[in-house]
Length: 462
Image (cartoon, rainbow, N blue to C red; front, side):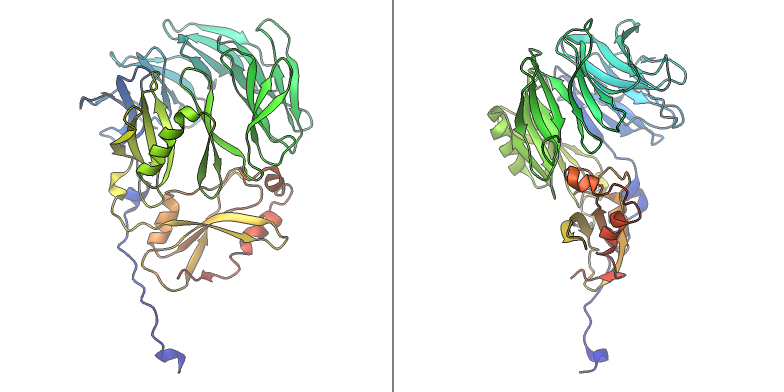
């Protein structure tokens, strides 16, 4: 039969989705419970479409705006343990010299806690037993390094706390709110974990990682005898380890031979790690504390999509849960531990609901040298014939794409393109062998691994 007489599959793209819906500000996002559980704060745009911190009393409809940023909007905030104020980060005109601002939830008074011109502030720690203090890294004395400062949230006093010799890139405080561990860079391109018994003692080396390894401190146990760390020494992927500070012995708490440890869930008051995640094709949770096993089981069954615990009150009776979907918004719920039930709070972009969005399919293939490459394929809705494909490459390169709603992928798919997102060699999360396979391979094997899958301008999306 002549080719011209064959019946071709019908192709019918859905209506175009407006870019403002796909790329616009969320209507409400990032909800956080106050430590006492009385208030709920979240981010939402004001009448000028600038993102602000909003507040409501739990159980009431008294939502009101707390902040009044004029230009860039607020995207990062957290509660203080006093429960009377929030802290948010903001820079000036995109200069990335972030300042920490506090806002009183009763008076709306805003104070710049780090009012130093040209200085960048980095939150380090805050603790429920020290509700009126915060530890902050700032490069006041030398713009090339961040020393530790202790800021009094009551009167705004800034006190120098710990000197940075120049190579410290991360600080860790204990349950007494003293800086006792740090991660330092080394001359060979690796890093080192250092520790001191007390704030007035000298630093000692606990462990070093070479230039092809990764590692850092997570937190101290409540009694200060255990330092939880993440590292891929003696293994391919980053593991969660408990380091006994007396014996210097390490215990493997959670690990996977191929995937790095991802998210970590910590008890709100006891400094105990309760669960960790490994991000494979999708997120997978590993429970370490059986007291939350039934909670995770109930949450996981409530609705489809990946879930994460975004906030908990100190009494640990109420959790806020976020469900990520690939073809719609993020859905936020209030989870009651006593009844094991979820109550809908809001979604971040309700205008996405009911739209003809595409699902995202995890894929993998073998590169020409035998290395397995993972990624995601988004197929346009209503298309049953081969279509042009866009290779959408993540930045970094030390980053990775994950499953879930992606505005760029949805924008392209809605306009008839298949979208291929490849976690090329050098991407993070797949262990150090995969990460280091990208070393010195920019514009070489790093790119070849992606081009092998896309050597033709069209792929079949039947």
